[in-house]
Image (tube, rainbow, N blue to C red; front, side, top):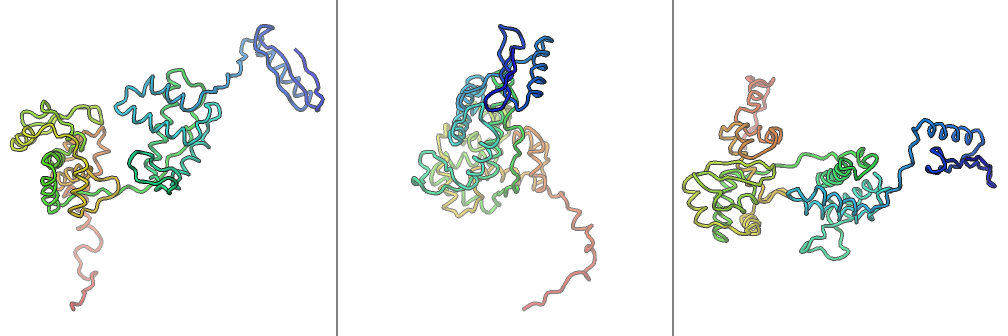
Length: 352
C-alpha cells in the first residue's frame, strides 16, 4: 500500500483493499489530498467487505454476442435464423465493435447511414450494381432493427451473459407517418382473379382463400390437406403462435382439395397485379388481399371482435385500424356538424 508522487506531477494510489492476495488497484490523480482520500476509501471498503473489483473488460465482438443469443434463445423463434442474419448484417455494417466499446453512437450513426441510403439490400437478385446508390430504408424498418438488437442485450442479461446496462436502452424509436392501407374495390377483384387463373390455378385459389378468410399469403400458400376439413380452414403455426379456424363454403373447400398442395406462386401474384394495372403502396403486394377482406367485412356490417379472431391479431388495438370501415363509424359527424340542416351555408355552383 502506497501513495507516491510521479515524475509528471501526478500522484499514484497503489493498494490492495482485500489484502495481499486480493485485487490490486492503481489509480492516478492530480493532488495528494485526492490520493489520500481515494486510498482511505478503498481500504475502508476492503475492511468492511464492500469493495467491488472492477469488472473485467468484455472484448467479445458484437457478432459473438449475437451468436450466443441465437444459440441460447434465437433458435427457438419461428424466424430465428432470419433474425440472426439481419443482426449479423447490422453488426458488420457497424464495424463489428467489441462489446465493451459498443455504444449508442454505433447504432445511431448506422441508422443515419441507412436513412441516407448508404447500405442496400445485399440479397441475391436485388438487381443493384456494385457502387450503385441504394434506396433509403424506412423508419419502420429501422425501428424493428433497433428492437431486435436491444432484445439481444436484454435476453443475454436475463441469461447472465451480459453485465451492465443495455447500450441501446435510451435510443428512441423514429417517428413516422402511418402508412396507407390499400384495399381492392368490388370491381377490381374479378379482373385480378381472372388474370391469376390464367397464369396459375393454384395462385388464383390462394388469392381466393386470402379474400375469403383474411389469411396471409404464406398461410394460404402453405396449406396442407389436413388443415382443410368440415368447411373450415385450420391455420396453425401462425405469426401470433395461436391456431385459428375460419369457415369457408363447401364449393371453395372442394376446389382447394382438388389442387393442394399449391407450391410457390407468389411471383404469379406480382405479375397479375402489374398486368391489371393495380397501383399498390410499397410493401403491400399480397397483403392487400388481407386488407381487402377486413375492409369489406367491416363495411358489410361485421363486428370488430370477430374480425380480431378471424385475423388472428394478438390484441384488439391491431384490429382497430379497420374500425373506420364500419357503416356507423363517425356517422353522426354528417348530422351534428354546425353546417347540418342549413343550406344557407353552402354555395350554389353555377352549371356550365
